[in-house]
Image (cartoon, one colour):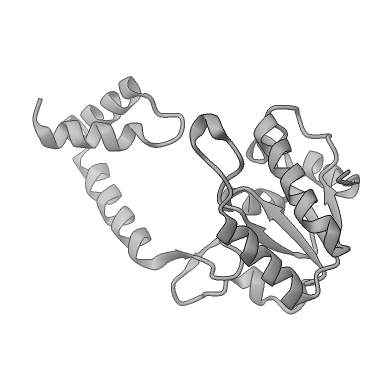
Length: 199
């Protein structure tokens, strides 16, 4: 097998939910049957790599020329309530529910020793600076409902409560063990309304 093909398969298999066999099928399909799609993907990936960055305030994906992102710059949104999420896709899910009036902060991970993943001290310190600068009164934890997310919520509660900040978490109308990305907007809306204070 040519090295270039092996590298393509390795790269594709690093995507979430894509195993080696699926990566192989995708690679062969692109190379043997769909040269137009291959060219389109190359252009799209290069463009996204050049034009998309993480928002310097919240960590959401945004265009290079729109940093901070549109949500962070929106004067109609309150800075008093900050929703902390694990990843940028979670922001889009909550936005689709259309009922959150505040702003966001992305942790870019969660505490997961098994997957060698953690929330960096730097990101927590940046969160604390953001809370202080914006006069945040409530931090709503928009985290998933798995063990690692529970550990992350507990850590953030321990860090934030001594500061006198109200720390809430989405109500568990969300299915246990699943992610925000799998929730429909109505379930998410109810979970936001029923959010509970973190103990």
